[in-house]
Image (cartoon, rainbow, N blue to C red; front, side, top):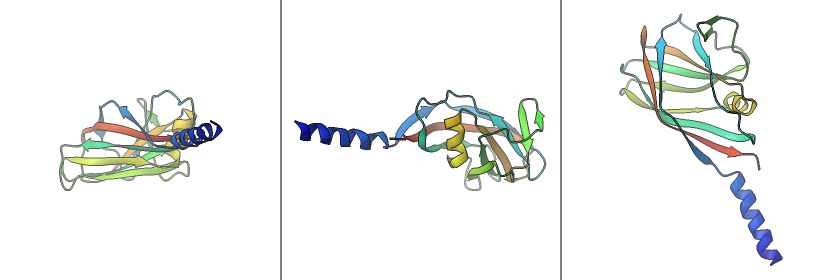
Length: 159
């Protein structure tokens, strides 16, 4: 009986670090072009997890109706800058507390895979303070809507 209980505990502790997929609702984000090199940040609204996240990856699809644009995504676990306009922050993303979390290039179609990850994304989730940013890298787009679809947060908790 002790042997069974020991094996059960080992299996249970192994499962605690296994990835868990959590669905995230689809949403749209209007993109308004800003100066070259700047990124637009918004504070993410979510409930802080009750247990610290050890790993985090956000995956899904990103839709943009123009096929010549490319974007870089950023994450910060503290206020990204002081330049706040209508609830958004317009910042230089090269600050030390801002980390690049992914890129998307629309040169091959209007729907592209999205995968965001990084230490600032994880620490922002764990602290309950996360700002996400996007920068237009190419395409000369003045405005448009980024459509986030079929998002799944893949997380592993600290055992």
